[in-house]
Length: 248
Image (cartoon, rainbow, N blue to C red; front, side, top):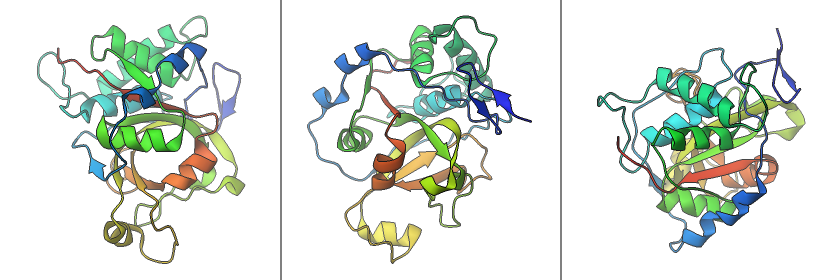
């Protein structure tokens, strides 16, 4: 059964709840202004793996993963880990801050979820990456990234190695939001993950955390080649970096 999103689009998989919303004022908050170090390998620690179930709460889940994976992972006021209950509440609040009137609809935007997390006092400033090098450098030096992109049919089932096949010829399934919590740049490490023969020497692997439970991919995660992300997912995509986080 298909699900109609607030922007009028229809998806067969209700988990694909990312809507496109871009505020031109976001260009004033370019993460490039904060970057000084080169791209390097980095993995941000975090044990939380969320499962949005058959809901459209991917933006709330992606932002919750970001908060849980921050350089110093954030928690609830009582000290408990951020969980799916928090992610669903964040998603519902995101709909309040999205551009579309009312809240009785499915789907939300990366921007709406960022505004919701800010309203709850978890983050202060958040910035945006507008090219792949800035995004990779920000993930490597500032913290996890939250993306909102097209989701291709080929991306539903990662390979056994965890590599995600980004094939535009497979067709678009809808929009999805997810987090990146690290980069792998070592040639030996990349070979151990995806094997040889891909001819992608020097191209980073982006470590993606999804919100489709631990049975998806490798413990709920996959790996996306940075050039695939740039070519097929970054156009019309959002790349948000939380630059100021607060403990409550």
